[in-house]
Structure formats: structure tokens, C-alpha cells
Length: 271
Ligand code: PAF
Image 1 (tube, rainbow, N blue to C red):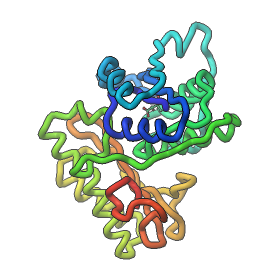
Image 2 (cartoon, rainbow, N blue to C red):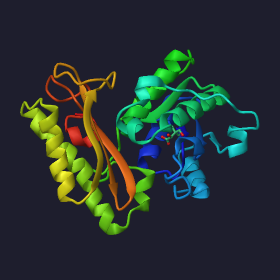
Image 3 (tube, rainbow, N blue to C red):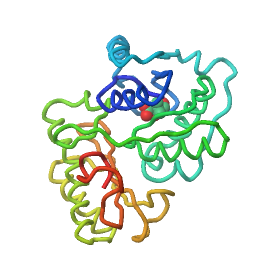
């Protein structure tokens, strides 16, 4: 399970699932510099390795692999993986090079560890699409398990960056999911216009004074253009006092509930 540490309940829930499904569980902890832009929060990204080690050991994780930059990118390291269209648009359009960094580090981690299964959270919906692309195209023999977003009681998706928020900003951050939930409600009533669905999100996020980076409706499988007949992902990125947060929900045309998944759309990141 690749992570950048600063574990929260989203990580811990993935770890517990991995623990229950696998004989041996290895969690990697590496704040990957190549997926941060020059003006992004690499240096500010939360780090607490000893607390992470204790949380991982509470779940009886077998190995915590915390390589140095030099181990991950030794002298002579030269290959980079461009994941193509999956990494363009949405976050990719606002974070040039981000998904190349993610694709490269994940491929290298999978190469080093050679797991049978790898675990990701669906809060990073586009990241999962990118990793699926890399694994398919490079024929990496691994099963990808992508699990629902874990949320705070007010709906805010768990994220390591939440701990960068001051209490007042933390409260306003709930508007990200409130916006998505507003659009889910309209979708459930039959609204299918991406412009009107995203307008609902814009209005709720705007009222809370968040700085919206994007809100978009894309095909849930390809991340290409949205067609009302197919499942879609409604994805958002916004800054709350300078901290960039992302979230998404999946909109399913038949009944607005993913079969076999949660019945309350906001309980698990899918709708
Ligand atoms: O989701 C993350 O924490 C990172 O993007 C990942 C997958 C560990 C790659 O650095």
C-alpha cells in the first residue's frame, strides 16, 4: 500500500482491509518530491514517521518501508512514466507533471515490492485511473483494490492535508462535500446537465468562501467527456486558506447508488 504518511483514518481503513485480505502487508511511506510542483507544498507536507510507525504497528502491518530520496531516485535514475490522457484534465490540468511523478513512483514501488495486490483510496479518483493505466500498459502483475473515501462526521474527506487547516478553515472545508452532496441530490432528482450540476457545487463552495480550482463532471471510467447514460465522476479541487483539497462522488444513472455499495451517497464517496 503506497502512502506519503501522516496517516489518518482513510489510510488506517485501507490498512485494515489489506490486513484482512493479505498474508503479508507492506505499507510504503515516501513523500515523493517528483509529484509536487515547484510552488506546491512538498516542504509543508505533514510528516510524522514515528506516529505513523506506531499506528501501522497497531494494525499489525508487517513492514513499513520508508525509503530515502536517494533510495527511490539513485544517481543515474532517468526513466519517467507519462500516463497520457488519464493524467490530463482535472487535477492534471492544474498540477503539471503531478501524474508523471505519481506514475513513476508507483511503478518503481511496485517494482521494488512486487506485491500481489495494491491498495488505493478513491478520494484520489484520478490517481486510481492513472495507476490502472500504468499497471495495464506496463503489464505489471498486480491487482488494484480501490476503496471508498472515508469521511469526517461533517462529510470532509479524510486527507493528510486536513491537519494543515486552522479550526476556522477546517469548518469551512466541509463545503467541498456539501457542494458535491447538493449536486448528488439534484442528480437524484433527475438533473443531468453538467453545467447545472457544477453550478450547485460552485454556489455552495462560493458561499463558504473557498477558492475553487475546478469542478467537473467526467466519464467515471475513461475520465473523458460525460455522457448522461454512463456513470460519471463529479470531481472538485479547492483551496481553503491556501491548502488544496480534493474530493469526488460517482454518479450512477440507474438509481444513483452503486450496486452493493453504500446506500447513502455521502457515506462512502460513491453515489
Ligand atoms: O496518494 C498518495 O499518497 C501518493 O500520491 C502515492 C500514491 C503514495 C504516490 O506517491
